Length: 504
Image (cartoon, rainbow, N blue to C red; front, side):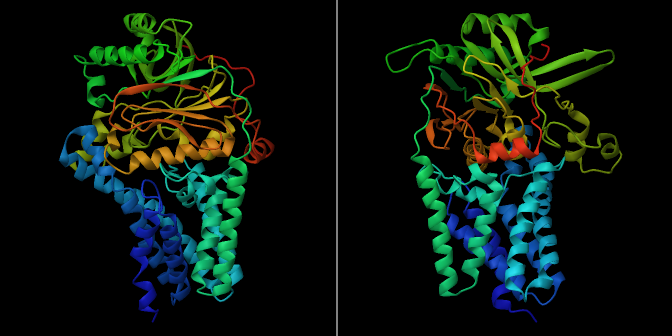
């Protein structure tokens, strides 16, 4: 039989890994949790036992990291029945999706457990492959890359994350697993090697963040956080009031120059901050022009509808607006499965689903996957527009970053208010700035809204659950990073050199 002293710690190992992620950020505990996973596979008496234990480890990690999903379902429906009937299966399903990768990896590497170097190498490579596949799958969910435990937090600068500029967050994940394997050897020489590796990672980070950034230009960004209830914007009797409050706040922030708060080049509003089909609602365009007149530009999340015969296509969009006129449009590419569209809807409708899930499948309209480029022209330079969780996909963001001056993430994280998801989401976005050497401006309806520089260092922040705004000089961008050059060399850029606006 396997050593019960080690195997009984599978669930604890998964929990410790979760504690390494934001907002807790105790990454040494994550290393301990990964070390327990390594030891569990080594102590398992069969490949099946290693797989079962890894599934248990992965489920413990997934459930404790994604516990907030039922809360999001409740916010969406205001129904505890929906939260329990939809949110709990969603949590378990996504946790299982996360755990399956680790379980299959354990099944593959277990036969090599008596060859420590080969076993460790296969484990590290396997983790990188799993995380890369999560970036590529249509149902990809790269929410929990192990390297994100080094993304920094409110107190700790992202020194350990700077190597993401060389090989993305996947390089960080590989290094985290290597360190955990060294710790698991329970030998002084291995611990010394782990300490030297950590010192090298930290030393590179310290050196990099002390390299001076290029001189910033004159561009300034007005960052706005409305802190409005999500249900209000879709209520026909309340959405004009919602838009008026958003525009009043934006006007006060962007058009009240003082010695320390100059007028902005671009106002950044969150996802679906303009809850109207602008092409079909001239009065909404007029309201935008009156509140935020040119030459001020507005980069805002909105919704878009195109009519083609009997079929209407709906898009979750990001638009550049000046004097009420739309100068550029990006339609979200990476839609959230079961949130923004229902995969295999016709087939699911025939299944004997529980009432909450049947209501979900029959009452929702699907958004359409966008085809336009996320690279938009603005007065602050070309920007890669990222809607909601698109910013957690490193390959997607890198492929569209050619020619970009900055990154903008607009999101509505009101569903996650009061949970760790707010901090997890923001920390993952920060990694894109480090990888690409581009400043990131993030506008979230209820928070966390922030600006980070090309090294991932926080420049400004609006705390969650507060309405407010800031005018911030746009930090400078780096000319490039090794990761950007690597993507450009191996993968053709997804954007065209010439930025062409999409139709209204």
